[in-house]
Image (tube, rainbow, N blue to C red; front, side):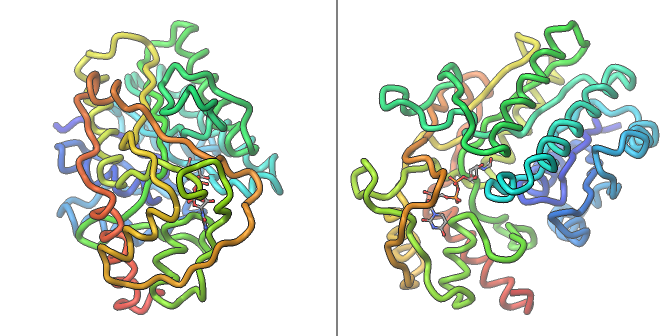
Length: 346
Ligand code: WQD
């Protein structure tokens, strides 16, 4: 029987792409998602890509009885990849209690059930946001770069969740945990059967950019060109979502093959390259041939000026590399946007 993995938030952007890669690596996947920020038909897209329909349970991870019922129904579960979380930085400032409750209680519930159901591996969807604005001499950030005070309740929940996981493992819990700190995930599966589906007006750069290119949005605002960077716009590490998904497969394999050397291992998952907003726009225009309507606007409050990752550890220890270029990732995002238009969805 294939090893079974529980993927919380599995109908979401990164969760759905990770489910595809897990299935194609031979794992049996159970998706748990409360559909608060995604749609159930993503399961159809996953099945259309892999030919395997993942089990799907519409459950909120903060609902302990309902979550435990999933563990009972699908035992034995070998590992968990925990994506389910509220993730809008701006909203977290307006509704901090929603974020602290959802993002920490869901994690605590999962950890509490693991020993009871002999679940061995826990992979947590963390974020470069825990580094805050790194000091100049700490760029690119390493896993040992000190974490900083979060810029938002959302970012703080990522730090708190990391601490909860570390303390639980330190208490002698019979589990192995891996914290994957992502940078900026972008793009869509090459099949265009799954991709990023932001609710309403996108906060993140790439969906806003492709919606502008499609004419859904009038103009893309570049939030500031007066930063201390080569062209004045912010620097980020944009990683293709399929590469990111494969980092989760590599991390789960490492745990289930008993190769992880510590109770908790931490990895940066990025390309290792810092790219500016203006560079990204130029790359998009060049690789798609689409002229983008954009303007320079005021800085966005809370934005980090520059952050990108040193990913040597993931390369060496996980044997994982981001293998796609920025061009390929942006083209996949544009193809996805065109497919949504073709289907009359957007
Ligand atoms: C990227 C750059 C903006 C929109 C987010 C999450 C963070 C983490 C990574 C999950 C910034 C600029 C954006 C626009 C713009 N994800 N921008 N015009 O802020 O780096 O972080 O993804 O953990 O938690 O918040 O991503 O895509 O919003 O912004 O100029 O319309 O694009 O200023 O420099 P960000 P983003």
